Length: 131
Image 1 (tube, rainbow, N blue to C red):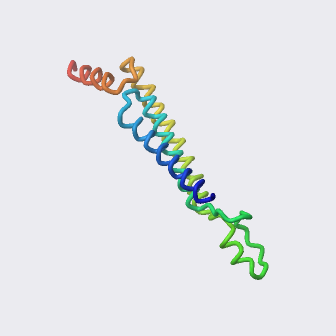
Image 2: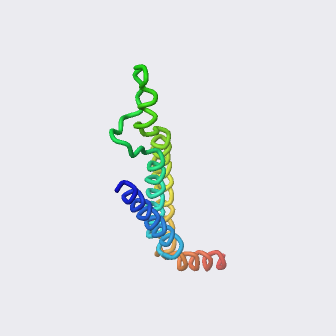
Image 3: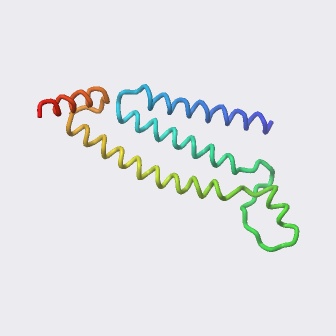
């Protein structure tokens, strides 16, 4: 049963990642591209956490208390804290990048009056050609 749930979780992650990539590549609206980028990055974060997760009951926090023989128990039942730390760092960096991209989208909308990528490029090229 655990294998089925794990495989189903992987399939859902792959479908979610493909939806994010589809939105980034094929959608013309810059806002939809930003939303798709956020979906894709969150999917990657969940996949990284899944790498460090342990599927043995009971799951314990990775805290060593010095008791003899505890190392083997922790190796079998504790989640790896490194992927969790990497994901936490990635979330902070992703938030800053999303804020920067959102600011760029707002500026493009102010200059061109649209968030459609092709129309915005066309308007900006026409403005450059006029100068």
